[in-house]
Image 1 (cartoon, rainbow, N blue to C red):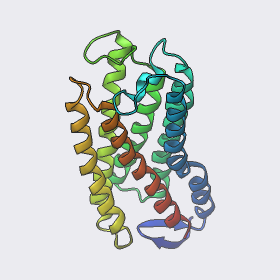
Image 2: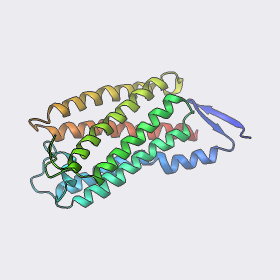
Image 3: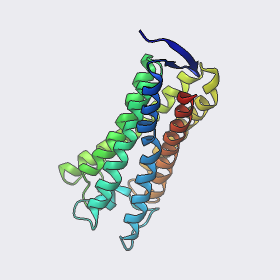
Image 4: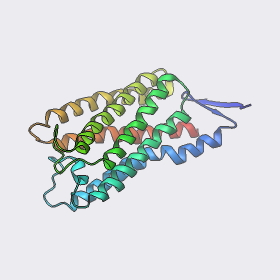
Length: 228
């Protein structure tokens, strides 16, 4: 039988589970920090190898488009590895946080966001990532991306409402709610730019900045609470 020894910010630790939780934090919540960093660094490096590529106009996915130069580097080092690292954060949250229905749903959504990123590297868009047309792979790629964004936006909002009831996590709750609202605005701006393809890359990067920042901050905050 497990003996409860502490409860910190709604994160319950047990004598039998302390070492297990610490190990989970080290192995998995670290993914919420490394994933965004790996993805961002790979995207920057891949862009330097593409003359004429614009961070403000072009999709990140264009770096890994079918038949694009160095596409494998962006797809596997960036999308797949970065995405799986982010997905591991969701699994860590399931193990670390209390077993509440909303917490479970939100944690699964975090993992789906990471899996969506990884899938975008396995199923590439066509050159230029055309919208509403192209090969089946292009259509699937363009469908997965917004769903992945919506998964993490929903997760941040759910966690925001859930953590408002935890005295030690109210700042994180407010930040999560703000993240969801701002990210929805960025997603709307991204969608509105698709037809003219003006500043599409900028809106996509700002959206990812908001979402990746949330992953990093949650990883640090929840990881710290789990080890206290």
